[in-house]
Image (tube, rainbow, N blue to C red; front, side, top):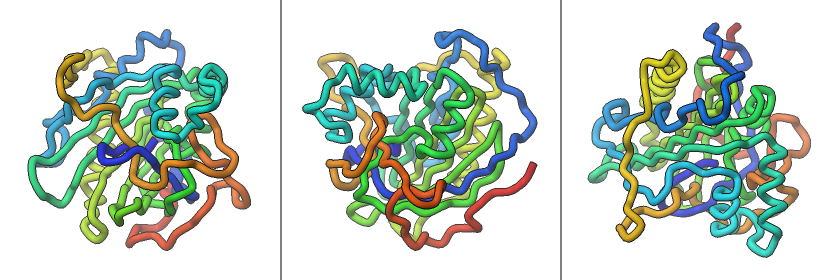
Length: 281
């Protein structure tokens, strides 16, 4: 899901620029679920652009039951539906759990915020499907418009897209896959201030960090989490837009695409972006 602290919805019809080739590194897909340390794979403040620090969240890790509760609270999933059935649909899509981190500036600057999400799937094929056909497994509604964003090929494949949210802010998202895990980095800017170089650098930094975790060189990293009675930012929120999804939806909130197999619903003229598809391999 495209995440941001300010609201809790993401949407649009999506044209995704995908890099189908691998950069040559092999990632294990046979470890037990508990042995994939998603927390250690998250970017730290030292790996972020200057001026950004981690937000204090009440929760970082979500299994399918937790994620359904979050999406129901945001009305991305119908809160009157059966939560058990909704969680089962996520399970059927291969989703196991995810880890979310949010970074905020202390004051006004070019990058308004960054959110990273790493989602573990049961199989590499299910992770690949989520990345290429389901907006990296990020929930969306039909209220936003999305355009492809050119990205370099890293890890087992990568993809990029840009979304204009309600209120006019722009979310630029870079996703890549490492075996059974899909990683998404979302940068939020005022239109015209997008920093694509910073977004790509964050993606490459995260890939390097993930490599270190797979190699056993990086272990779990402490992140700020609010005490139960403390004040925190709450559940990390998706990019701004209408809170009610329309159309045929998966449990992740994605509107089922029609027409072109790489498009969801409402294409938009992209803000200045490079060519739509990364090539190579």
